[in-house]
Amino acid sequence: MAAPRSPRPLVPPTVPVAPDARQRPPRNPLSLAGHADRFRDTLSTPEGLAQSGLTEAQLAELAAATDAIRTTQEARADAERALRTAVVAAREAHRRGEALYRALRQQATRHTAMTDAPCKRAGLNVRDREPSPGLLPEITDLTACPLPQGATRLDWTGPSGGALRCEVFTREGVEGPWVMVGSASATKFVHEGAGAGVRRYYCVEPCRGTRRGDPSNIAAVY
Image (cartoon, rainbow, N blue to C red; front, side, top):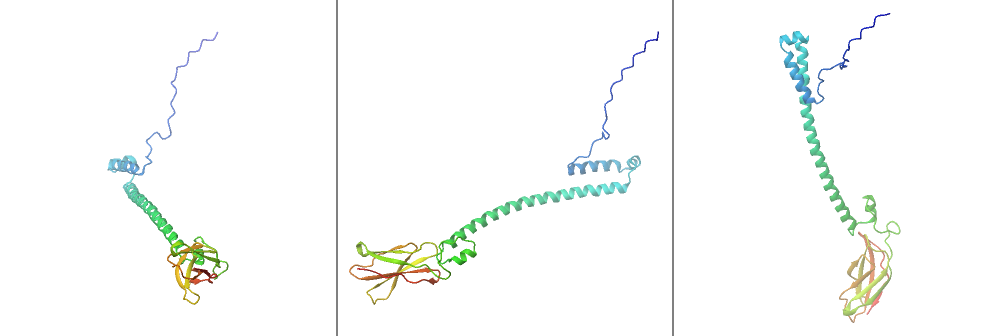
């Protein structure tokens, strides 16, 4: 009969050790520079050089590299501050430029002398149509109606608004000179103080900028 085997001694399990259990260099550039300075100062002595196998030239190169890290990090911080300042300035310039551009567009669009052609070239909305290039719309069916206290109301047919304005002329009698009494952007006009007891004639002339169209028919009121 075989002799019983002796039990094997219990061996504590081994804990695996990482290939590089030493402290790794920090990822932060300035922290890395500080660790590198401490490493260099420790090994820059004759004893440290002999034990580490490093040379003074290698440690001098490391010192230059850490100096470059600090210099570039300072330059980066300055650049980031300048970028933040530039971003704020660019946003303010954009806001002011947009506000001024909108105000000037609105002013130019509303100006009575602005015609369709420059509106199109400037990228503005054309506010009224021209029947054909160089021609102004025709004004027809002008009527005159007396109002109390010597006023006269005029109504006519034709386009209105935008750069088009209608200048109103009147004269006393058939042979009197035509006198401008006002202008309108709509298709009606009230001549205040026209006077009672006088036969008066009216006509309306379309205008856009410096161009003038054909006058309307003549309307008379007493």
